[in-house]
Image (cartoon, rainbow, N blue to C red; front, side, top):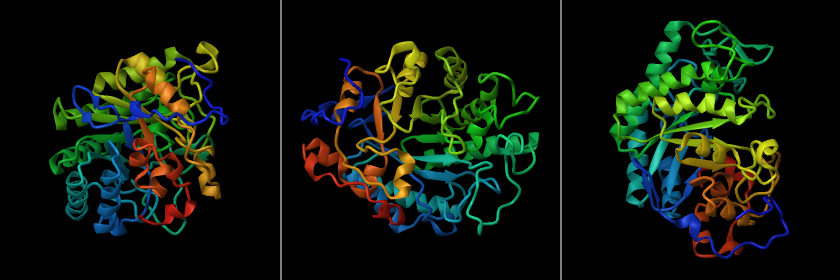
Length: 381
């Protein structure tokens, strides 16, 4: 079924059952297709999540989210975070805190994976002092120098840090782990030609060559967690440094990008767009063509998660300017899922303001969905 992808005049569908069909893959089974997208909260003092963090995630499990992905949590590198209260996913205190989180989610019948990341050369709160930054070539974006290129030793230590955090997630009982490789953070800075100008084996003219760092991280994680533990990798074309950036301009380039990552051990690709309804390559399959997640699934044969302003009319960064919008208009999403374009859909801001968004949608209570309120960004509600 093909539809006009974003038409606000279309009345909401009443049949949302496709969103609540079980998802089953060789390594991960979920009760429905709704994923809580990772959203930075910066509310873990000293990097340690506490009871408030656990209660926040538990409420989304009670609200019937199929899979919760945590906010970005940092690996064990000196400059891995760019805000002072980003949670760690290393160290005894932080891991004990995360044990409380996953136990609370499981008690509420949910499933969850931490998102592990490194913020690379991205800008920080000016009051938050950081050690020398990890970047591929000392750049945060083209022509913005923020440090020196990572050494071979620093790269090896970073790969190991990701693997160590993933192993800890498995040991704590998390159901999966997600690697953050998107939005202009460290892994994505290796993908991006604008920030990866290395001439050694970690660089290269093609996106396939620049995928080596991410592939090494995936392979190291696979070596730690074994063959049957599911690994999710989040990717994006756009960067917070440049919304128009594109790593793959054609399906052939996307295959060069994704194939080595799949071969290294990725089980599910989480494909971030600012607006999920936009076609990735309209010059190939038209204005109603496949989105990023649709192309990733077609190219790799692996399950994919789509994400991008679900239930909202404003784009991702519009929310931070104080915009609000009605959480409705699910027809385009349902149409894409019914034709199997992607397997799972991640919901972000809508779940910040309404922990019970998924339950309300399942019960047909569309009129009760709460609008996104930017104030939700400042609290663990």
